[in-house]
Amino acid sequence: MKALVVDDDRVLADLLTFTLRREGFEAIQAHDGEAALRRWADERPDLLVLDVNLPKLDGFAVCRQIRAQADTPIILLTVRGEEDDLVRGLEWGADDYITKPFSPRQLVARVQAVLRRVGKSPTPALRQVGALTLDASRRELRIAQADDDSTLVALTPLENRLLDYLMANAGHVLSTESIIDHVWGPEGGDRDMVRQLIRRLRVKIEPDSGQPMYIETISGAGYSLKNE
Image 1 (cartoon, rainbow, N blue to C red):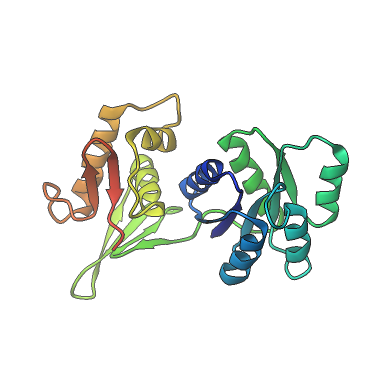
Image 2 (spheres, rainbow, N blue to C red):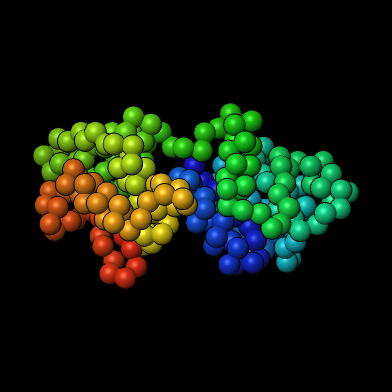
């Protein structure tokens, strides 16, 4: 499932993108209203997270133009507290709004609620990266082999959550702290537990866990799943 994040604050846009990718979305960005319309037309995302205060074309105008063509779910981001502005956005077709500042958890909760209302699921049925195909709902990983056969691997809940997070962010380095937050939550887990979980997962999926070909350790930075 694809989400388009539109905000001219690039730091915030990066944070929102990271948050959505952690939840299993393919997240892309635009930083002004005109670029948002172009990206929406080219990419046809399943969801827009759209700032109201944008250069070139404000979020209300973007919302109005998109809504005239499609029913893509739209969540507005605004620092404005005036009721008239919020009513205006909803009248022009926005599905929900969030007033800044807000937490990543609040964003995720709003996104999930909007998608439930329109009958969409934020979690993909299958996730595939190279030879790996994960069915997170069943906690099953299928590994394609050179002879056109495949190996089916059953995962524990923690292994499943970790691998799903790595696959959703394939090619990107994930810090140990972000893995802890995603797999155990901010109040649980530590670096030793991450290392042990990585080791267990490698034993299950790597041809040689001592020389991993899927999950890389990036010294001083974290871990990454090769995007191939």
